[in-house]
Amino acid sequence: MTSVSLRASFLKIMKEELEKLVAAGKISRQHVEPLLQLVQSGYAMHRSWGFGKIKAVDTVFARLTVDFQNKPGHSMDLGFASESLKAIPSDHILARKASDLQSLRQMAALHHLDLIKLVLQSFGGRATLEQIQQVLVPDVIADDWKKWWEVAKHELKKDGHFLVPVKKSDPIVYQTKEISLQERLIGDFRSAKGLKARLSVANELLKNLSDLTDKNTAVTEAINMLNVEIVSHQRTLPALALEAIFVRDELRLAASAPGVEGELTPVAVWSQNLKLGQLLEQVPAAKHKHSLQSFKDSNPQHWHEALLGIVNTVSAKLCTEIAHLLIHEGKLAPLKEMLARVISQHTAGSELLLWLSKERSDAFADILGPEVFRAMLTAMERDQFNEKKSNKLRDYILDDQELIVELIESADLEVIKDLTRALQLSPCFDDMDKRSLLARIVKSYPAAQALISGEQSKQDSSLVVSWESL
Image 1 (cartoon, rainbow, N blue to C red):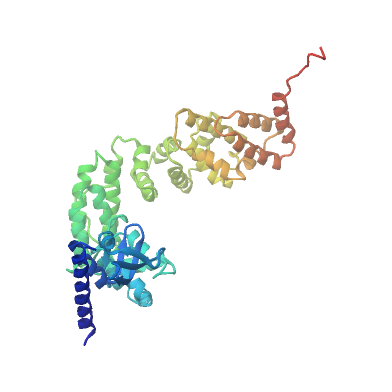
Image 2: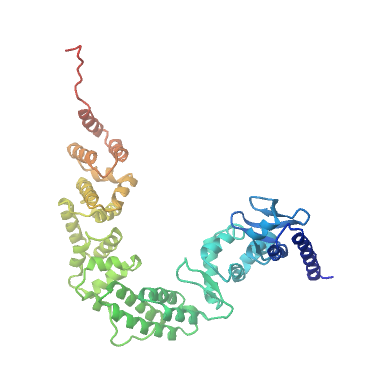
């Protein structure tokens, strides 16, 4: 007798035993089929106790014994078990982990797609990256998960049975019908809603150009569709239109495709009457460098004046890219002149000062002095007054152990005393942070201890006289 027929005979006997329990009133008729499924699969899932292996069925006392991870040998009433447990098929990834973990580890090492397919089919044909990682790490994949996934993801994208989404939170889908990578990407590109979504697919197309069967056809269609949307977004969403122009040109360059007559160029966006700082901030940070170079090329005469005019109004990240471009193009002197002016006038913003604090290169050595710290306190107080939620400059001052010391190293004691008093009165730091900053000053300049102690003693020098002494 084969193992299949033996199993069928066992299930038949089990069904007869369960029918007897129904007749005896120990379980209900509706419990029979779920219990048979549990017995047949040999594994179960409970919403609170998780995955478990069925160890025994006692038809005399109407009990089921299950080994859960944190409740081994747990005994359950058959009726309760049928209602609270869900049968897990023996080919489910969780069942395979319990019965044959070594073969799964071998599969992970040699056959990435087979393992991913097993996981997806175990979860109804789709699962998110987080779900896949949770079920495989660390039992099946004990080593570097990120490295393993990068290799597997590349294979998934090339295989026509898997749909790999752009967003990590969306599920990866297994489909029986095979669809080529090119067909899938162009299909995603056509169905994408809005230019932003279409750009995400265009970037995927760019990354996978070498794996496409006919990249010229794919790129030509993508460029034509992008050109239509660039025109419609040029005035309403210029930053998005600019990003689309960049991606379009990168696609063309990668595929060596010819240009399209009459298509919009970056000049068409930059020549509009726009708020330059706001537009640049709306461009993804990864495109800042490209955007600034594009702006320079479009405004060869006055680009540096325009950038100097906004550098005190943008984020520290954008400040970095603007400064690098200015320095690279020989505009360090006007940049330093602008910095010296806004610092001395205490109009420097916290983002600009944050960039300068991180930069601290020899090129700005003559600017980085005690006046910069005064400007920082002013900028932080201004942010606090304007109820700015984050204060990255304050956090950086606290985290960088050397910053204050370096800024005041050229100052005389009177200036240090003045800065100390300003720090003690500043509402931007709590008492503990103030003590920490003052301690840094005293450690490097012990002479400042008397000044700090003196200020403290003045506050505590009130005269107390008893009635008896009078």
